[in-house]
Length: 412
Image 1 (cartoon, rainbow, N blue to C red):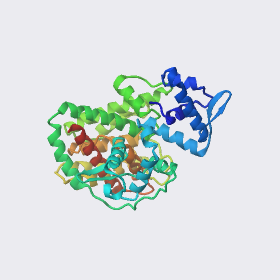
Image 2: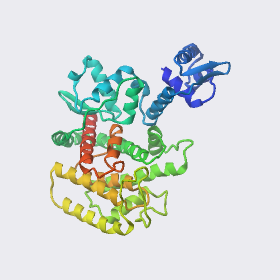
Image 3: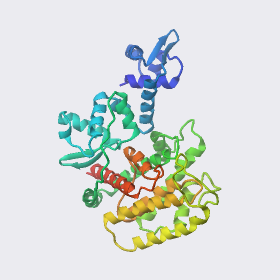
Image 4: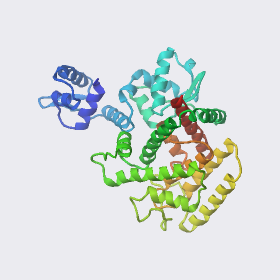
C-alpha cells in the first residue's frame, strides 16, 4: 500500500511539479487508486509538505521537510522501511530508551505487544541490541539518525551517561549456543554468513563515502546488476572489497596467521580500482580527513611499527587467551594499525578486515558492524581526538553480541 511518505519522497526527489497521474503510474497503481493518491497530495499540501498549482504538486523546501526527506533517504539507502520508523509513538519510545543504558518493559508505560513491536522493528535494522530474551533486556545505541528521528517529532534528545559495561558472560553464553545450533544446519549458517558479509561491505564502505545503497549492493554482489547513475570506481570498490572479505574468510577458517604479506594482499584485493597504490606501503604523508588530531606514522616509522605490531600479534596468538584478553588485544591491534596507517588509501577498511580476521581465528564469528553502532565505532577509532582502546573494546563487545544473538536467533 502506498503511504503519504512514499508520495512525499517521490515528489520531493522529483524537484519539479508532479501530476497525480504520474504518481499513480510510478507506483504501478490502477486508475481506481487515483483518488487515494490525490487525497494524499491534498493532505500533504495542508501540512505544508507540498503546494498545489496549475502545473501539479511540488515539494516545499523547509528545514522540517529537508529532515523528512533525509530520514527517508537514509532508510532507503539502508533497506529500512521508513513507514515503520516515521511513527511518533516509536520516536517517543526511542527517546525514553535513550535515558537507559539497559531497559526492559518495566521502563515503559506501554503494553507488552507494543513494546515487542518496537523492539522487533529496531532490532531487525540493527538499531537496537537485545541483551537477553528472558527477561527481555535491550539497549539502543545513540546515533545521529535516531537522534534526528526523535527530534523530528519534537521530543527531547537526552542520553544516559556512558558507563563501563561488560558483556563477556553474555558473549560466552551465545558462543556456546552458536557451536550447538550451527552444527544442525551448516547450509543455513553459510547463507546467514553471506547475508551478513554483504551488509558489512555496504556498512564498511559507506563509512568511506561509497554512495551505493544496501539494496543496490545486494543486487550488485548477488545478481551482478550494476546500479544506474553510479560511477564505475564505486562499483569496482564494492566488488573488490568483496574479494578481500572472501579471502579473509577463507584464511580465518583455517586459522592462518596474519603476516605482512597477507595484509598487503588483502589491501591489494580491496584496492584494485586504484592500481598505483594497491598492496603497497605508502611513500608519502597522509592525514585523516576531518580529524587533524588523529596522528599517523611518519613514512620512516611505518615498517618498524608494523613489525612491532605483528610481533605482538604472533606472541598473542601463540597462547590460548581468555575472551577478555582477546577483546583487549583486538581493540589495541585495531587502533595501532589504524594509527600506523601504512597505505595511501584504504587503511580503515583494511583495519576492519584484519581485526575481523583476528577475532574469527579466535572462534569469535564477527560478520558485520550493525547500523546502530557504526557511529560509536567511528568515534572510538578514526573519529576520536585521542586514542580510545577501552572505548573501542566496549563497542566491539556490543558488536560481537549483536552478531551472535542475531545469528543464533536466525538459526533457531
